[in-house]
Image (cartoon, rainbow over all chains, first blue to last red; front, side, top):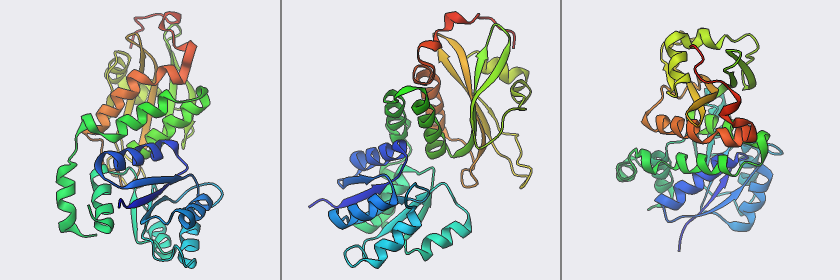
Length: 123
Length: 179
């Protein structure tokens, strides 16, 4: 059975690219959300094997969504990778404090992203 | 991250401009834009997410008046920005002639590190009707790469229609402006 990745970004362009990377280079199924609140809801419904999530988003940002997912039994164990343009150390620290497993910066390299996902999900 | 497990995947997905997923996504985003505002938002997203910059501006080229007007900027105030001076004589000629101009000598005052700037001609029927200026890279983006050049080319060739729509007709401007 294919692994499922929940991709979260308020940018339609980023979502398009991440979907395209997953479709071309992996067998993972991709579901999407466009802000943190929708991500928390979709994670409960879809039970993804991994969440790939932007940080700066309207309604609820990635840090808050990450914290919420860590508090809920159904999503507590799901690996979360935060992906953002903000590479400052303070941001990365905040990301790990919110409970993410990994933190990568944009622009995302397709090959590195696939390698990272495979390190969690297998090929 | 499991480096050993990742090595094969990295090798398999090695940089391949033709199959660069950014190109497909950028093309689709521009083509699906609903109006000028959405196209500009798409352009901002492409530059921020794929090229690694959050300081950019779009200048309309007025060949008749021999001037450049800021029509949009993000992350930086360009009211007093002197585009011809930033480009230099050769750079301006190159961009108006349809080539991208990349200035590797631009320096970030705060860190004194080299920061590339890119100027991309937005073209219609072999004329430059606008110039996209990418003015500073994010700290984690060290330089432009081969894949970025393909993306510049795509923006140059395909951004005019969604950005300017019916106003992109080059016949409204006079060719042969002196650089």
